[in-house]
Length: 184
Ligand code: ITT
Image 1 (tube, rainbow, N blue to C red):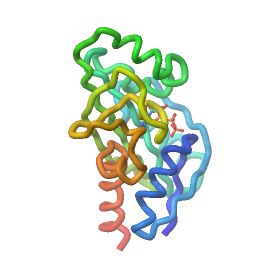
Image 2 (image 1 turned 90 degrees about the vertical axis):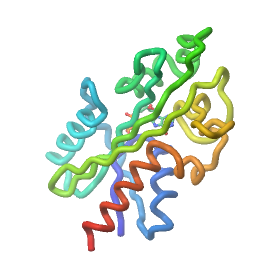
Image 3 (image 1 turned 30 degrees about the vertical axis):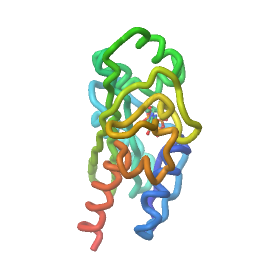
């Protein structure tokens, strides 16, 4: 089986490929930038993007909308994570948290699949924002995110390790289970 992943982010593609390979599913990247609306939830952003794409491209395909939610910043950057990563970057986030004792944060991912209808799959991982960036793997905010139960950041893990516990890995697991049930 072959799945089309609509994304501009090669890090996401790498994770999806590694996740699906042992299941015998090939992941093909369709690099299209779709509009990301300002909304309160990742689900709304994902669903709007999926419907926008469905009007223009032949399905099935899926996309992933993710965000980093920092407790001390009332959930910021959340749905604005892509914009904040491009503008403030990791350094800007660390600056906002300077002197802050509460470093709790979580990542959420919404995987949205279009096969004529919208199907949403979600995943979440709790953790904390480190004082300094660590590690060279992964992408985005990975060097400053340390999942609960580990003393390494996502950027210090292999893709397989990250996939086992990450927001995206969990959303992809729910997606894979759904595919198994529904594509018999
Ligand atoms: P798309 O084309 O798939 O939309 P994107 O990078 O713009 O790619 P998002 O809209 O989902 O992706 O933005 C989420 C931002 O949060 C993105 O810029 C990343 O820097 C960051 N992010 C998402 N998932 C992450 C992960 O697993 N680890 C670290 N940072 C992540």
